Image (cartoon, rainbow over all chains, first blue to last red; front, side, top):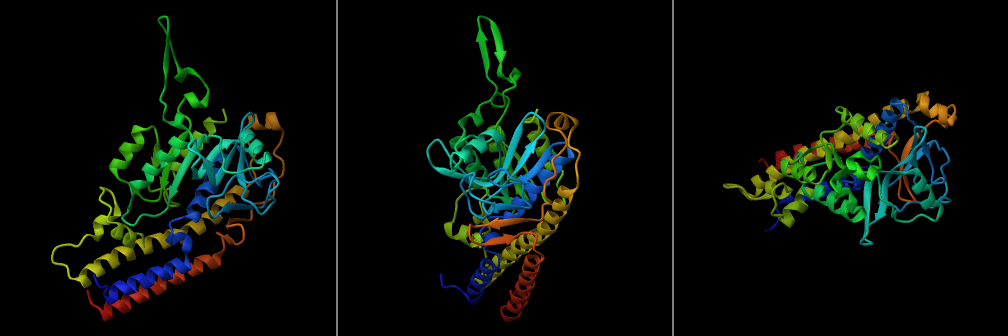
Length: 249
Length: 131
């Protein structure tokens, strides 16, 4: 089909948009990612947790740097210009919340998680051993999408999240397990170990809506979703913060 | 932009973005292009408006984050009083060489200026090629 004048005008406008705001045009949505990250920090603080912004060495900093592209976990000595993270603690446990970290799955393929919560002890040890695509399993993984052309999120996004989680941590698909010993049953739901009580958690967080088919897919595999989450409608962030806090208990 | 890509890929899938790009009955190339352009306009407007709103929301969250907090009783019992931490001044996106401050008001101005130009171009096109 020969492009009409209007087709060419559309293409030119798209190029303009890509030139002015490349991150937006590619759907990287870093502003959305940064907002969700900071908003979670504020809600965690509001619930009594101590939250600080630190660099790769764990030193408090006054600017949070998040990677533009998927980035490996930096080495502890990467310096103050490398990506930082949130350090959360509430007494016993310490967690780190990262943005845009690259993970290496069981297949050795790499994946990006937009926001991930990891054990601080594991994150620190990994950075001190030189960093790289992170190989420990996250406790929580959030896939963030701030756009949709149709007002609903393409189904490829939840499919991609489940595929990523399967490669990073197949145990994320395990439900409660009941063991029977000579007539006595022990349910893993009774154990306090996060892995046996529905962790890691994965969820889609989006400014748009999901198709019903996507919800069925996520629900069927123990994953969650938070749709229409924007600065004007941010109640779900409290739910996510509460889930994170259960990891600190 | 993604609409056009999706259309070109012609993804056969419920819930894909290609549906809007299938030619509809009785459409001429121009009326079809206008229909797609209006969909694109809706996406661009929604997306960029959200981007500008997020910048403001981010500044608000930073302000809230910097408010002093006592921390929980439990945390204080274990760790002692909160250690003083530096005020958070901004959030930067970095590719290793260049950094973009997401709270930079100039960035919001640029986004809004593009939106204005985009609408202007649509108006001009509407006069040149009614549809």
